[in-house]
Amino acid sequence: MLRLVRFAFWAAALFAFAMAVVPHPPAIPVWDKLQHMAAFFVITVLGCASYPRLSRLKLAAALVAFGGFIEIVQLIPMLHRDSDVRDWIADIFAVLVALAVVSVVRRVNAE
Image (tube, rainbow, N blue to C red; front, side, top):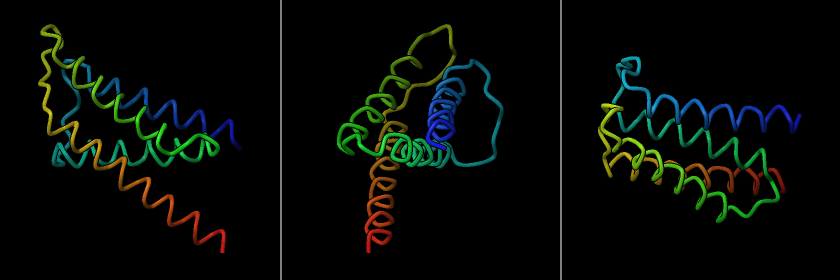
């Protein structure tokens, strides 16, 4: 089961990166920031499930860096994408919310 969850984690991260850097991504009629938050929420939850012994601080740092890396890559002119620090802030917010949810679920399950 752990292999399947890890595969889902890496597939979700790769999919998020691909959608962030393709020159003409499919139009989704949902607020852009909500798309960022949904993607990073899911990736964070999958990351927690995939690597349960990894410090949540290290996972958060890696995912925040990943979100920042995406915004830097979007600065490449030939991609025709717009880098926006608010997108990175949405990513960070989603990571923090997801970590809080995972912490509550783990605490409830431990009781």
